[in-house]
Length: 230
Image: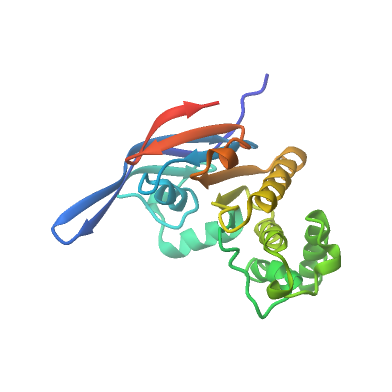
């Protein structure tokens, strides 16, 4: 059997913040690997380091110490401009609060990240329409966010995350602003996406009912993985 490719690797990662005379260690020697095509959930209580770990994986921050590899590249040594380029090309983000632009239609929100990656106007239109159909919103492409339900807005956000065909989707509490029924529908869609497209998904959640949708769960406490759940 062919061995799965490691797409993300955190090795002895520390993140320390200085607050006055105090040092706060958000991550304490974190080790983590994510395989290509895997659906991983990172769980933990508030203050456990989940968001900091997500920032490392998403190239939003660099460690105080240690290595963070994305497809073999150690991002710990990169400049902010290089990090921004990698984020735009390789990472798709899904946020708890959707982060859609209210003055743009669903289609225009999805087209936006493609502008910065050099897609032609026709390519942007074609890709956005294809993705809206994928998330069952083909009939709503000209609607603005305030004309959509919370679940529909999150599906637009998922489509936007897929716009440039990224290597990894990072989902930060993707159901946090949704009721349980709508949140369940969004998770069912993410599972379908993972199964049918083989997309690598890393999700942060404090809710075990949400996290259990993943192939694997890792539990963080005090900046370290303390328990593996399969």
